[in-house]
Length: 260
Image (tube, rainbow, N blue to C red; front, top):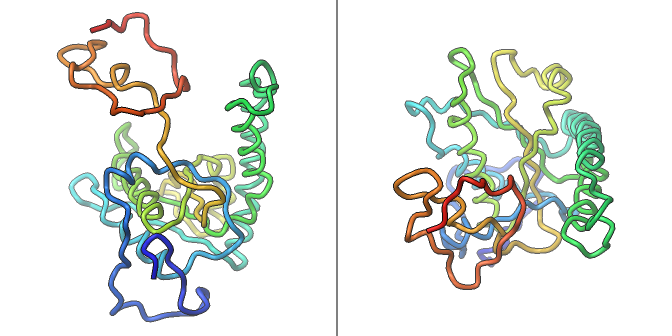
């Protein structure tokens, strides 16, 4: 078995006894995985085998949480009536959200009008993603079981598990993306899936075999993001490795940021 591609030995929709099966090997080093896990929004039309889902969700459940309470839960939807209904609900919500963002952020103006510009490519990818959302192989709803009133830091007990999940998918040759499309249809999802009112549906994750490939992600230069002794003072060792590619995306650089 190639370590970057995990295939099912039989129909992934059939029940299997995986109790004696160890986790599959992977050839992606930790640092490589951390720096090359892209947001994957296009997938081949094929299911994700149970062996892969089991490994990916196992990694998710190993994530840290406050006081190790492990209040995260995952609803994993592949096929079936509930899965199809949830994909339809979230797909409709995603189209509404993207339609508003596309207009508000003027994705079809300035560089967006240039077919091969990053802005135009992003717009095409997002449009395809929302238009075909109902066909994503796997839909995962990460949830937080609240044990106290909501706090600003409560996401620390669910979002690390989501990152573990996406990194594990990368390690096994799959890809995914995290969105908030579910928030526009929260009440409908709760009614469909029986999610208690005291549980927070924290986002939407889609998974599948990538169309395209993973690779180095583009971010802003380290000196803009990593400070030393005081705010805005770049740490002297915050130097990007050779060959690093950058992006100008994100909030504008503060005028108060000082140069080293």
